[in-house]
Image (cartoon, rainbow, N blue to C red; front, side, top):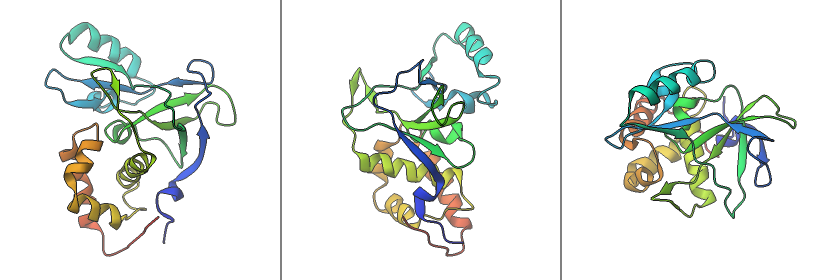
Length: 197
C-alpha cells in the first residue's frame, strides 16, 4: 500500500511557541551523555518502559554514576515556529532522542494525556544552533523510517544518506553511524517499494 510519505504518520501538529512547560505540557524525555560524549535516550540506555519505570532509574543513576550526565531534552522556544507532532500510534522514545526529538505529555487541550514529539534545537556550549525547518523535516523523515520500517520506504532518504552522509551525521544528535546502520538494514529488506512525500 502506498503511503503519503512522512505526513501519513503525523496525526496532527500543534503550534507550541505560546505553550508553557508545566501548565500546557510536561517534558517526559531524558538525554543521557556518558563520560565519552555518547548521547542516549535514557529509556534506551536502561532498556525500560519510558513512562512507568524511568523516574526511579534516573534517581539511581544520578546516585551511582557521577561521570554521566542526565537531563531533560532541551526545550528552548525558538524565533521560528515550534511544533509538537502527534504521531500515529505510540511515540518511540529510543528513536526520538537520537534523531533530535524530545517528547512531551500534554496537560491540557485536545491532546491532553497524549505524548507528542518536538524537535529540540541543538545546544552546543550554551549556544542554540540556528535551525532550519527543512532540517527538522529531514530528521522527522529519519524518525519515521526507523519507527515504521514496514510501512514506510523512503528511497529519497536512502539516496540522501548515500550521497551526503557527513551532512546528515552533523544534523543527528545521536550516534549517526548506528542510525545509518539501522536504516541500511531496513532498506536492505525492502523489495523495491518506493514511497515519497
